Length: 279
Image (tube, rainbow, N blue to C red):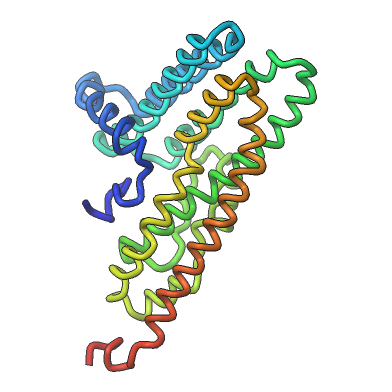
């Protein structure tokens, strides 16, 4: 398993490793033969999100509606995995494609959650709760993706932040800014690794388990919690989980990750100078 892959398995969400990526890999050859554009796959995934929302609109009419909504969201995740694989395999990666992928991802959740909101009593108040939750979702996701990107660039031997190329659409600036400030930022560990790149394997081994645990913030796990909240008969539990539960978990995980990075950097600075320079 290489740490220089687009999605290094060592930090990947288990549901991606075991379900989403294997299924998207099976679809990749057919998509390549058909000449399908990756952006079309992104929009198809968003369409599955819309169908899922229709099913969740009927969540109170029985568990089969919830199950159907959940399965359709899994289909969206498969499309979300396929569009990136297809873009890389066909040589059609682009900054605009990244923006379209991200927008379709957020809209998929929008199309799922808004119908649920409209089924609840006093839905304007619930919509306010869902809106606040959506802001937390955006910040949490940007931090999560930023931390993963920072880990992956260090795995490639890059210890300075990389500016995202502009898409030309002019809508990705805020997302990139949040990601760079919260996650993929230059930190003391970057300076330590730049001074002694031979310590990179130790850093990767020490932090990979912590970065992998961040997958609790992934879209996959949010999909699971939406279904569980509906099965429990109270969709509000999802929004409370997103606002309170995931925020607390993210804060604890951030503290653990920074502490582990400091430990690795501290071990490097305590080395004798001859060991650091190979003398």
